[in-house]
Image (cartoon, rainbow, N blue to C red; front, top):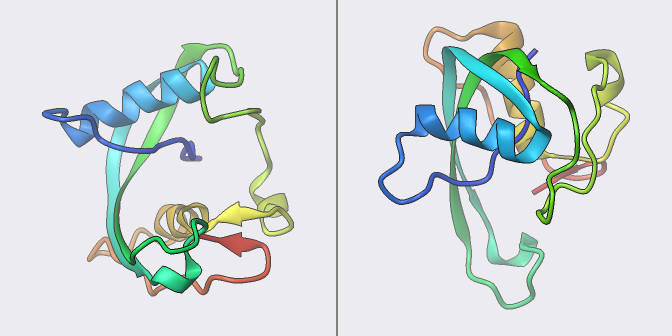
Length: 128
């Protein structure tokens, strides 16, 4: 199952390399990229942003399937990830989660030939 870490591509960094770096930074796990799952682009309206008064934001997500090859699961030291845990796919729907989690799951489960899934509705347990 694909990991769900990720935040942003650093300046001049290849997105492929970002996957490996973010997995290590955020989870302590070593991983190899097995395939590109797809690319998602969506606009988050200003009124739905967590920061009051922030402008609308376009988010482009590049999703990869990976295989864990080593390391030890842990939270990100001095970072944004407070906890890391393996969660069975069947239990994910009951968790509060960000929309990219559902997008990644849809891409991994269906492997659409175009690499594109229909927009994921935001609300309830699914957040931006």
